[in-house]
Image (cartoon, rainbow, N blue to C red; front, top):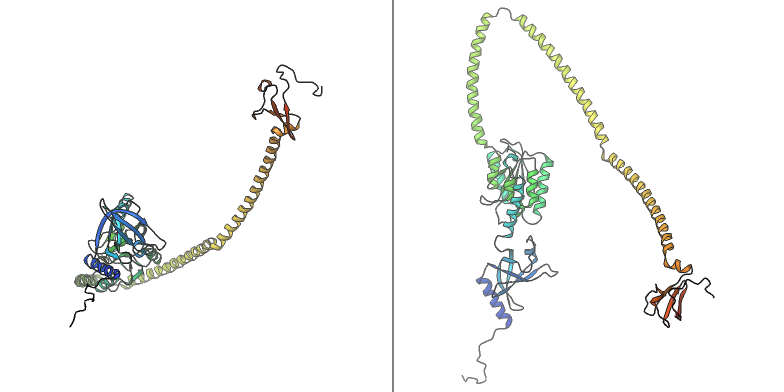
Length: 459
């Protein structure tokens, strides 16, 4: 085979797109996730809701992007110059060939933002006494009804129901469903606690969820949730995350359980232990009853030997029983009469407190107030009108134009200064006299500072 001298033997060149794609793949496979700390610079928030910025230190900088789905979970927007830590993935923006980090989380450098907020709220609520042992309510030993505030689809409710079914399946359980993660969770948890109070069935309330990150559990560190738990009249058990997870809800609740399963164990009696105790007490009671029966039987035999004619005593007891029956009937009748009177009185009070009646009274009061307001406004306007007319009259009296109208004039020299003295002008100088309907220009022919005002101006 003859070699073609004109054949291109150079190695195949990559396109720019191919090179950037390979570089991106290499970066993303080499750096799965990194934490980077630096000073925030060039922070930009377009209408899309994404964040674009750079992190820099004394020598270098790197571009960063944080998309809206991630930055919506950040509690406070960072600002130019902040010292921050970000967690994200290293990648390459292929269109421009820019080396950058796609941020998933951002927090102030040093103590994390969430941890800092946790400590601040903890100090605040502790200072208010919400963690005091003296304000915590006891958990009932034998609850008649258990309420659970958690997600209906999470592992926590499954664990709780499993434990309760094993320990004491006869106790009814009511789920007050809520989301337990994300921005809407705080308000939903508060509503679920309030719903449990309004329902009034549960005499103990488990509040919690399964494990997760600090961000996942954050709704249980919100002040609104803490205050709702503190204000709840039902004894509460906090069961958030795993044993190592600690939230503000744990401090405020009446009892803290390390897990949802542990919470179910703490609020429910063990059915098998109860049955064992019942059987033991039944055995002891039976033996005690047998011994008592034997003693009574012995005593009865002894008394029977001494008893001569019991019929008279039986008749007296029967008569006493009839009297007691009669008194009981009268007492029941009187009690029912009092209850009917009280119910009637309460019905009348309820009718007087009817929202419709109160609304009508409020509407009449509003109409009266509106009428009084209109009259007061008219009186104020009338007084202001009188004051305006009086002020206008006073102003007209002292107005310079009124003075000019009475025959006086204001004289100014060539420089525009008012002539107040005969010596302010010189012979030959022009003066301008302002009268009521215009200006008169005159030339000074003589200055007589000592002469009196002429009696007849025409002479």
